[in-house]
Amino acid sequence: MTAPVVAPILPARDLDATTAFYAALGFLVAFAPTAAERYLILRGHGIELHFFEYPELEPARSYAGAYVRLTEIDALHTLFTRAALPSNGIPRLLPPEDKPWGMREFALIDRDGSLIRVGAPLRLSED
Image: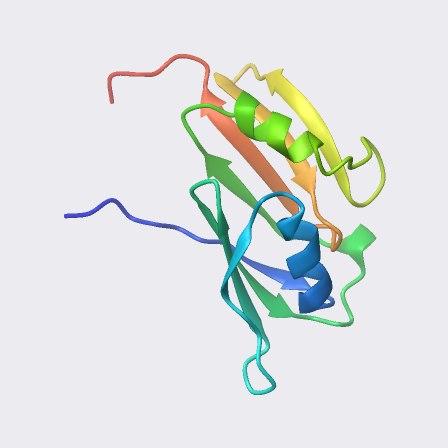
């Protein structure tokens, strides 16, 4: 049995703008939107993200999000800082922090207000 792949499906006001935003973070297009299929799949850094077109979305009111669990996050955060995102507003990139629930996490809020929280265990369990 292969390991499962879970990919969040997130809203995007403009799929071309979403492609450009995530390209700056090192993601590549796996499925490009067409006139008939207004859907986008991006892959990068072992992460797969799906987007559906939702032009009426208000980023400040978005409640969409995903949690991506990796084994190490600091190098990925360093790569993401190259996109020069601010630390407040929409979009934004927040620095890694050790959380009381045993995870080291950082947060990315994309141009459409979707929260992508990326975390790694502070200590690997024997599970």
